[in-house]
Amino acid sequence: MTDQELKHIIQEGETTRVQFKRRVEDAYKIACEMVAFSNFEGGLIVIGVIDDSGDLDGLDYQELQRTNNLLALAASDCIKPSILIETETVDVDGNAVLVVQIPKGKDKPYKDNKGIVWIKNGSDKRRVFSNERLLSMMQNSGRVCADKECVGGTSIADVSEASLRMLLTKRYVKELAMSGVEGETAPITELVDLVAPSFTAEKLLQNLSLMNEKGQLTLAGLLLLGKNIKQFMPVFTVKCISFVGNSVAGNQYRDYLPEREMEGNLLTQYMATMNFISRNLQTKQTESEFNSNGQLEIPLSVFVELVVNALIHRDYFQFSAIRLFIFDNRVELHSPGVLPADLTVEDIKKGVSKPRNQLLFEFARYFLPYTGVGSGILRVSQAFDNVEYYNDLDLEEFKIVIPRVNGTLQSGDVPHDVPHDVPHDDSEKSRQERIVELVKMNPGITRELMAKLLGVNAKTIGRELAKMKDKVVYKGSGNHGHWELLN
View 1 (cartoon, rainbow, N blue to C red):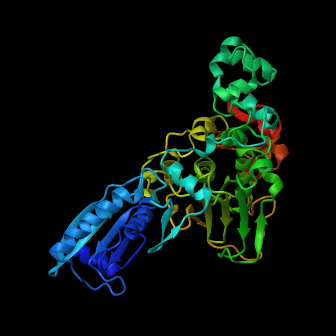
View 2: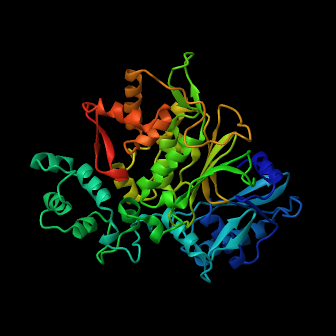
View 3: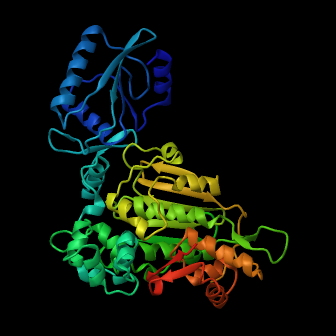
């Protein structure tokens, strides 16, 4: 580090990653500071700077030697597990300043030798008492995984038969094709015996790590296969509100998503959230003709990627909900937990992916429009390049902001079941092409949502689908099925 670089750091003052010390005399106290940095994002301790004023008070040779020895002692004997630090002496205007670099820890949570866990809180530090926070630290170190934890009180009785059938028919396509068994109609016991002879459904789920040896569902099993997540984990949901104005502090809203619409598993939550978005965004015409197709002001594909990513990659050790807020000038998506491991916003924009929830990462593709190859954010950028991402370390959340391109709404404009100004398209060919596009983006889409997005009623969609039996087919029953393209 050059003296000019250090001068700039000192001028900026203390932050979550920089701390000033005039002198260090106590190994335990400085170890607590190191613990806080290690449990956060790492940082610098600059010794020889008066923290109140930023003035320099350099160390002499004996002080430098003594302080280096004390720092080494603190890092090895006063921190569990011990850490490796780097020290460097920088001459600034004739003052010898000792710069200590503490790396971001890879074996969190770190503790002092009294067993206390510290973490940065602004330019200061605070003790960590929350078990959830400790588990999140361990998860980021790869020592635990939230979706592998079992959910007490659950059993095979809490598994949705339709969801289990979806898993079996999509995961074991070759086995079903070779047997000639019709996966959509065969009894579940027959399907299980076909893909895993002599296994029960419980044994198969245990082999897939979706259930433990005691017959309890893992969190991934509940989220993907459960009849009702909210019965056991009520905070693992999506809160959706459309506000009047541009402030979350406003006391008026246009629409909100009732809790009852979230009763189910991740597929239910995904469909309810997409339905909420579609009915609260405006629709615009893309061509000059009155009867041209209408499109959402923000492409639906943007929300397909972002909502799925939030459901799969959020931190499930944080006991809070995903929040979707629609304002007059923007849409915000708040996901509990910061980016996992050492990922940055720039990384995810380049397609770098490090899954936090390993089981969801593996199995979500059988239920949701998800590939798992890290291309989701890239597709968002291609469809709509104004999306902003914030990895908020202080609030421990990942926030996404999508500006609304149609400008602000008027306070009196209250969306109802059908988006405003949706043009009707009388072109049979064009409508069928758009139905195919919607199915590609969202295989679980309902006829009602298709109707809202295309500006027609559900009966019209039904008639169109009846003419498209050679192009698309619905597998399953009710809201638990999905569409498949035949060509």
